[in-house]
Length: 221
Ligand SMILES: [Zn+2]
Image (cartoon, rainbow, N blue to C red; front, side, top):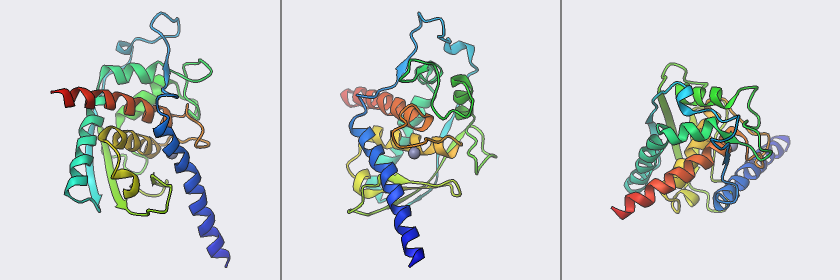
């Protein structure tokens, strides 16, 4: 009986987190992260921070059919394009939180520049030996009654993604979701699903917005 209650509580807490993440996607434009203006004295030119390159790698992709795989790999491509851009560097370094400060919430005492550099190092907490890579271990599952978009935990590389949401997502939304989860994989967290200024949320939003723009241009050609 006790065990059953524990499992239920776990499912409940996962639902809470990811329900709000779901909201974040539908309200992405309302909460699009701000940036310190280049006129501002706290603005840091991107050239002040060392450049780096990240490759997006699918390490283990389980449960995806050929169409889903195609969408997933398109999201990998756009994710790779975004994270290696000068604009992404500028937006992370000069990210401005909702209080107007150039700082992420739950930042572990790290500056925006340091967070950018850790991100671009590509060393997942559980896989330190592959610098320069965003390594993805993904499992697609199907729970149509669930409001969970996806979940992961600190003791595994695997990110679980719910088909119920994945099937309707455009590649830029998948890229945003992957970026959020992967930011957890490099050790950043949020105190609640409302902490939109945290690195996982804010970086996820930045990537979603930039990827959407790239996808629009791509469709025109
Ligand atoms: Zn999260």
